[in-house]
Image (cartoon, rainbow, N blue to C red; front, top):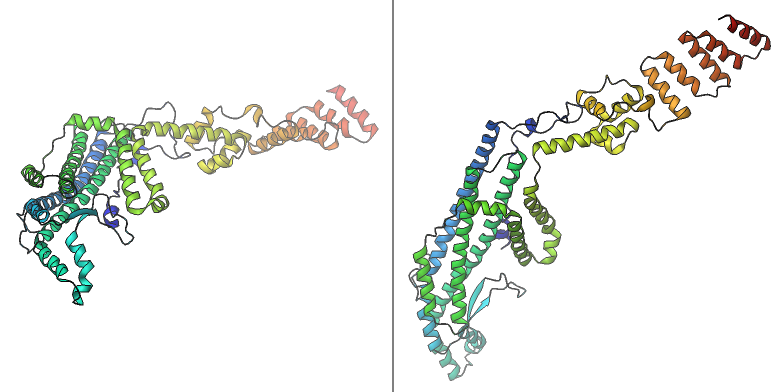
Length: 488
């Protein structure tokens, strides 16, 4: 049973053909730019996407159709076994029809009943998997020891002898019940699988079309139609088997007329092979109601897996994957296009660039890598020559360098230090000297010295002398400096 269930996991992946050409490039290597022309997917690429999808779906469809053909053949055989027109196993002889066998068994005052097939723990294997139980077999099991030891009474021996006259009819009925019950379980399981496959197909097509900004066309709806046709065919086969099993239950466990078995079996045989019709409008409706369809399929699929594996094992091993798979399918209608993804990518990149101007933001640096460090340097130095084109575009779009030649958050000595570093990086000796001077108190020796040097570099002798006056230790020199200033 677990092997059967495992086949229900359908691997699905949307085509990503051309993503390397269509998706935005990585930041720092020609990043997508705001307000530039939208990304256009060539018709040749769109046609190729559809062609590859169609080829993949065609191969899957052929395999699924082959499986359904086999299932329909086995279901048809089970119906013919019920009518006594075919043997239950290869090489055997057709048995008595279920209706006539049941009538004879009941006339002999023997009791039969349908019960679920159970596992070693007495738990039902599946809700739709039944077997025939009968009073004669039960009685034989009760008396087998006495019979073997020749201790059975004459009445008990007569009971066994009379019952044995119906043993072939009981076996024929048992074989017919088991045949239709097995097909009911298998076809119902296949319905779940087919529903899941169809859902994934449609959600995949919707997601792919939205991603590449393509509209669903007639060829897409043809793919959806084929999936829906196969699903409806699987549902028809399962419904036939289920109706037949229900009829057995009604006439065996209840008071239904055994002739009902013949009516259903004969009517079903005439309806085979099963033909279903799905219109393009049906396909469009399925797409429009995709979210609802996903919810329905998930509820059924989850219930089946819980039944097979138990709640505890399902929660531990399957639930996370199932939830993720269905969430992705349900969100197909919300798939963003390549242009939307590019815009989101660009907006995030700009936000990261803005952060990197004033600090080495860890999250931003994790996303854009070395570009963050380069932007930080550029913001402090004013030199953007090392920035790659995409990074430079984002740098300029977010306001360029911070105000006042450095981080607006840095004032006083810290700001002067950054200014100085930027000036040095730019080869601006004047700026470097000015900044260095501001890092120290104006009346300090170092500060005055640096300010004086800066003034000299600028060709400002009065500024230089004025700076020298603040730190020269010899009074006579101060007088000389002051006199010299008057001559300038």
